[in-house]
Image (cartoon, rainbow over all chains, first blue to last red; front, top):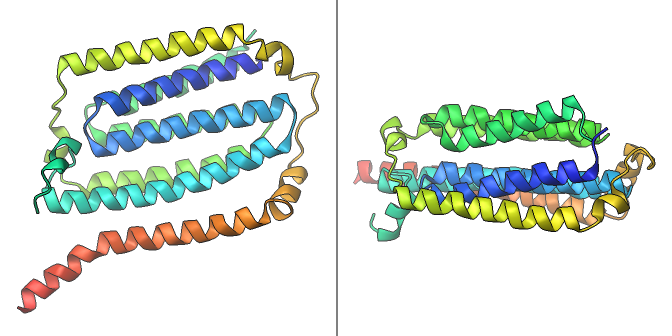
Amino acid sequence: MSELIDFLIVSLVLVAIGIYGLVVKRNAIRMLFSIEIIANAANLVLVAFSRGLPNAQGQTFALFSIAIAAAEVAVGLGLIIVAYRLYKEIDVAEFRSMRG
Amino acid sequence: MADPIFIGISILTVGAAIISLEARELIYGAVALAISMLGIAGFFLLLDAPFVAMFQIAVYVGAVAVLVIFTVMLVRTQALFTTKEDKRRKGAGIALMLIIMASLGALLLTSGLNGQFGNFDAQSKVNFVQIGQLMVGYYAPALIILGLTLAGAVIAALSLARREDVEQQHERTD
């Protein structure tokens, strides 16, 4: 049977991968992927502690967090589409020039 | 110790997360991200949280992944293939990833959290009647604000994506 620490370690690995993606990648959609991976790792920790305590509030917070993440993805992808129309590019380094 | 199902799901989740960032074509990355979210839903099932797992599959695998795939199809493919990463930046990113894993992992292993909360068998499962009571009871204002936030975000995304078309129509009539 798996224990709390196993879930925490998987979550830690996911957070580290997400931070790596945020640091290295310059493609805006890939940076959004990284944010999603980090948010999922946070949800995993919430539910794991909710099971270990046990307390239903952790799962409630995880549900709220999933809904907020859906709103964030919608706005993020809208911004990416606008940036692509303005710059014909989704490389975040190109957005700094503020032309268009 | 961890059971084989857990090890399988964790390899699937972490592997798909790496592929989603490293796949050459962005569309494969989006599919890999959906698989990774499905793995997280599997973890929720292992943690006796079927309600959260169902929500995760409906929202992430159902809505977010499809939204991302449509955006990838809207953005022209040439812009997706330009990889301008330099090697030093990538090396620094991998070093940062390993430092975070090692330091926080050492902190977790020595924290004693596992001894305090780790034994899942000794604890009773969370009943999802409790979640429902919390959501419509104590957290009811948060639920309403969440609904308004979602509606606002969807309207904002629609207006962001639409504005350019209106400008183009103005240019045509001028």
